[in-house]
Image 1 (cartoon, rainbow, N blue to C red):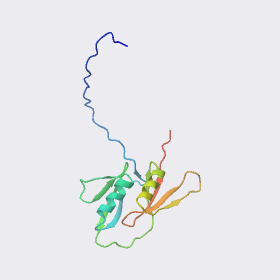
Image 2: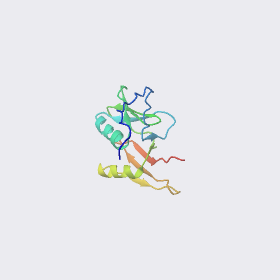
Image 3: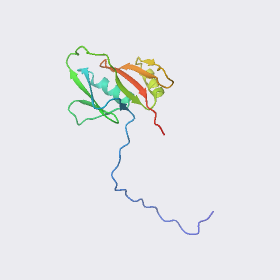
Image 4: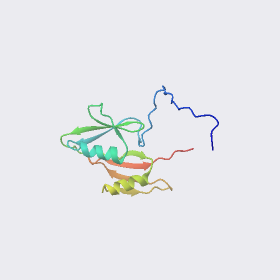
Length: 144
């Protein structure tokens, strides 16, 4: 197949609109920023757990350890010695795929409990972060 006219070189036009960042794949089930405690020396383990496994993003501009989710931030108070917890309420976190998270947890050899809900599709994972904070991780589904 031959073209009637010779082709001209393509010159892309620079897009000057501000770039909109993609939303993070993880959300906190909360109405504002959450605070958890961790013992000193667990910073690398916390980074690996929250960034690699769950998909949070670390906010390096802060003076404390802060992980950003799509909707709120998770802030850690670093203590020399862990204090006794006042309650055992788990922090709610939602991820896009519970199945993918299960595979990453098995690969990382992290223990978890799968808790099935009363209605179909309402299952979640109960896990502890490296500091011992209880987490309840569920899957969010977008409604069309």
